[in-house]
Image (cartoon, rainbow over all chains, first blue to last red; front, side, top):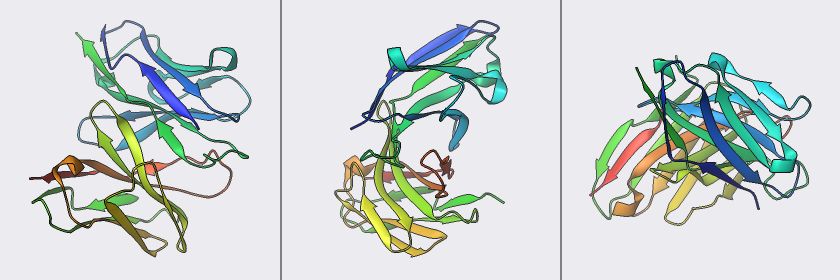
Length: 117
Length: 114
């Protein structure tokens, strides 16, 4: 079975400050990892994903995440927050080939990011 | 036009009523999914379909059923709605290729069961 834990249901930062949203996962096979963003009253939009290769992944809107296998983590960062980054962020894991969760996404509980002026 | 559409966008119904939520996609994807979102719980998989003749239960399928009428259409039914099915429901699609295919989400249907 696979699972995702997002540390902190709410994160608040000032505009221009570093954004750090934490995600830890468990998976019995090498995972594929995703970050999605949900703006108010909208569906989910893919920010970035890790499949194989380079462990530092860059996404849209200046976000990036680093896959750390030894720590089973995939934390999302952005050097300088903007007001438009206010949204809910979801980390998700998808099982790789050979596992029972092949092709299925499991989501974390979400982190609401608030950006103060 | 949106690639993944859901109808209705909002629905209020009463306990015991049967309702259907519909999802259509123009992306040509073969895989479709239904999730529900509850505050603090993230998204949970209800049902998924890897092609027209393939339907699978997800994490929380009790009280729900689905129909894959065509490759582009995937409907979710609540046979007898109950208040704890009040939630935001999302349809998603992806394309079979490798396991890390991205899922694309519709705008959601907000359901209130009284």
